[in-house]
Length: 182
Image 1 (cartoon, rainbow, N blue to C red):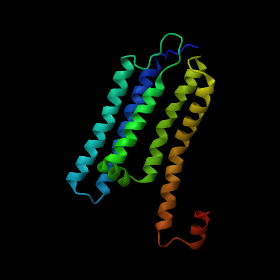
Image 2: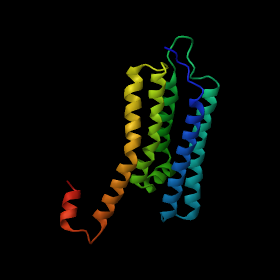
Image 3: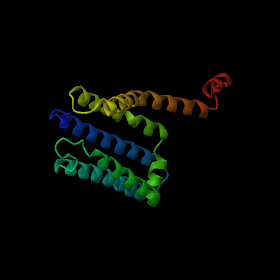
Image 4: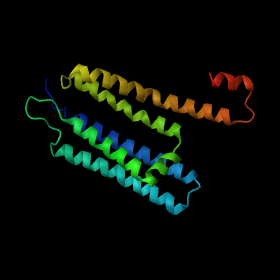
């Protein structure tokens, strides 16, 4: 198995992640503007989360370029460290940083679902599998699962938004409400 990543994927991944970060920050900015928080708190929340996301991205890029995830010859990649560390740090930050929790509380759930569109980037796993760069045991479920979630995310987000608006509408008919709550 050839564990090297084809050069054509690097700009694709890099661009995709920049778009994801921009979408997350746009959603946060819009949600904060709709909130009743003072403008100073909104700015602090936005710039704190921005710094966190951009910082994570820079660390991920620098450690990747430095070869931190490059395995010794003939061994599988060590990407699990690149996945586990941000999860652990994210959970710790979320539990200990009230500002971060408030920022996430402000963002609507349909936006959080819709932004999962980025998971279509999971097609990368399928491309790597097709090129003999990843084993099928990992690439097929990860690639198919992520891609499917990414494709369906906008539809689920719109459905959630519409359903929530209909349920809130005082003029919604009883039959519509009964059908929507099934």
